[in-house]
Every structure is written in C-alpha cells, then in structure tokens.
Amino acid sequence: MKKIILIVVLLLVLGVGVIGGLSAFGMGPFPDLIHQSKTDTAKKEAPPPPPVVKDRTYDLGTFIIPLVSSRAIGRQVGMDLSIVVTEAAAPKIGAQLPRLQNAILVDLYDFVPQHADTRSETDREAIHQHLRKVADKMFGDNSVRDVVIKSLYDR
Image (tube, rainbow, N blue to C red; front, side):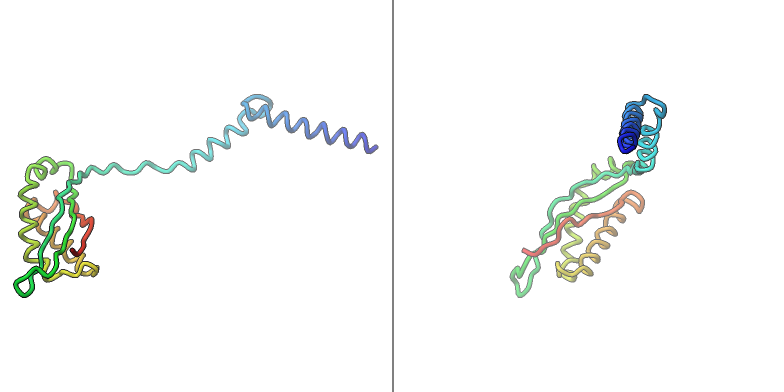
C-alpha cells in the first residue's frame, strides 16, 4: 500500500512539473497562465512617463564680491550661479547673457555686504530672491524660471 501511495504522489508531482514547465514555454493545457501574470505585473509596475519640461539652463559663472572693512578687503564672498529659462525665451536670453552677468555683478556689490553670512539660510534665500528680481526685471516675469545658486562660500 505504501508503494502505491508513493508512486501516485511521484506521478502527481511529475505531472504538475510537466504542466508547469510547458506553461512556462507557452505550451500545454494552460499556455497563458505564467505569461499573463508576468504581463499583468509589468503593466502595474511601469510608472507613467515624466512630463516633458522645456527649460534651458545657462551657466552664469563665478562671482567674487569683496567685503571692505577699514579700507581693506576683509573677506570675499563667492558664488557660482546658473539661470533656468523657458525654451521660448532661450535665444533672446542667450544673446543677452553678458548683459545679465554685468547687471548681476553690479547689483551684488550693493546687496551682498548686507547679507554676507554664507552659512545663513536666510541670507542665502534673500540673495536668491534678489537675483530672481534682477533677472525678471531684465527679461520679464515669464521667461526666467529660476536663478540657481550652485554654491555660496567665503574666501
């Protein structure tokens, strides 16, 4: 009796293995069983494509602002800047980059001495907002998306 039960269990395991193997290759009594579950999980896992953002970034360079105290340069504040503009305004702004760099440099000489703490997040945000205003004043409100302060440091 034990031999018969063992043979039946082995045949059952062998039959399930053969059916599973054939299904894995798209054949047998259930050809779409495994392939359908793979495509269902692939459909669920695929995230939607990100929206297309049409912005262009221009590097404005490094600006060094000397801070004068007692008729000598006490220290210098340096910053690396870039500007993000819309695709439509990119040709106009690209042609005017030297003019923008000059306007930013002249404006930073007046503004940075009052906000010269490079470790302060408040001063960094004040400089960022001021640079946005300068760029918006030159090119209009909708063409400049952001002025990015890549680094702000003391020298």
